Image 1 (spheres, rainbow, N blue to C red):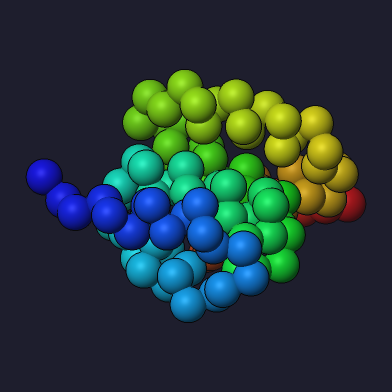
Image 2 (cartoon, one colour):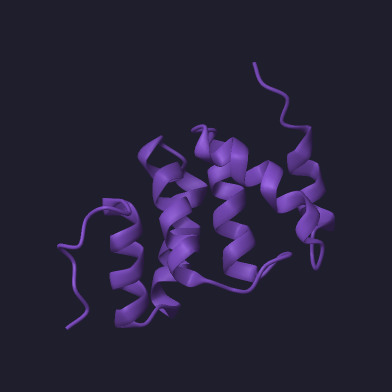
Length: 104
């Protein structure tokens, strides 16, 4: 079982970007809770600029692992997204080497 004590810092993380790299690293390694946390970080701009496409991306990864709370938050984020942000989120899901999804 991995140490998830970094998640308690999420409550305090408002304008402190120093915690984001640790959480991102855990999220990239597939930790569902960290993926949810990254979605929340980007949705609310906790230590980063608000980025709804990134938020949707990270929340989708958590949803894929069965996180129901992530699904609820993803729906809220999705309701605030523009068409361009949806395209950007889809590109993130497809990966950096795919250019099949175009905004036009």
